[in-house]
Image (cartoon, rainbow, N blue to C red; front, side, top):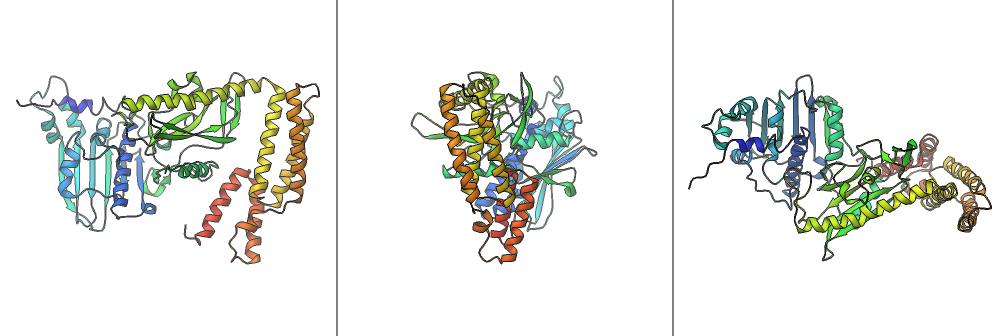
Length: 510
């Protein structure tokens, strides 16, 4: 029996599958990342050579996405790019594995093309889809003689041209992009990619290195790739995850500033205690819903690419609204958790059922309890004051342990202890017994800290700057830190200092 696949299957795999235009960026980026991984595994290039470039040219209504991965050999191009839903990729090693992601741009432009070449090959292959013709052939009631295969053959063109044998790349190009969609809005595209793509934390994000370090200690490696975007090659700039130290939160009392005070890490195991996912979330004052939606919600990532969106984990909180109060990520590592075709969730199998239980037991329960506790504290001025003093004391203890950046910071810390002591004195003597007990303990810690700060000679430059530096060079480094301390907050100075040390250790070759 002959089985014929209808042409409207193609419509289901484009418009029906990718209803949000921005999804095509995710699909092309994840294909680029898979190609870069393959190039690394084959010894074709090193991690530091990875590069993904995205040009969003609104004036010309064109988009191009280029990676310098393996590319595709000429004799494999037709099968790789024109076979529909037939991929040799595995979900356990690749982010894209169904063979339909490359179709994502068909619905949003007049012409979609793929240009590619592989290392050692002196030819490049250009595959072009005529999207206007495709739309005409898919009009219901017309061109009824066509099936899926004949439609693909009718709307595609394949050309082979000369290329340098030393090059290897893959370029997606969309021409005549629909300007009704947001695909040509550079700022919106940047925001989307910053949330979805497997890109690094910004260096200025103080907690980024702690997150990576903690996950690495637990066997979790966060794959990161440099993605650059701009209106032209000359204006390209790198995109980073949007996380930051401080942000605005909206509550019944109005908009207030919240900040990350510390991090909580958690793991989700299956019924056999095998690791399924590892994650982090920010401990804040949980003042309300985050105003910046790029940050809100604990996000699920596999291969460091977003699954779903900011609201995907809403159902697993005791109160769904609390998802919007939280900041964090869950990194999926289990091969049994398989993204669905739309990548807005996972396939509903037994592993997914266990994963949802783990989500409810971790972030669903923990964050809910912390939010409720924070709410009670906000309504209790005495406890609120004690908690603030506790945080200030902990910060000073951490500074003493790591060392001062400068004499200016030492003076700042000493002044902060005086202010903190005043806050503690302000707590009334008739406060509840538990509060008085906590106040007394904090006062003792403050007294000890004041002495330790006064006597400390623990400056970071003394122990961190390479020993082969001359006294004059060390003085320059110390002067640099003095200036930074007077102009920036400690989190920023700390991030810059770590970057400075890495530069020193690399001999200026970073």
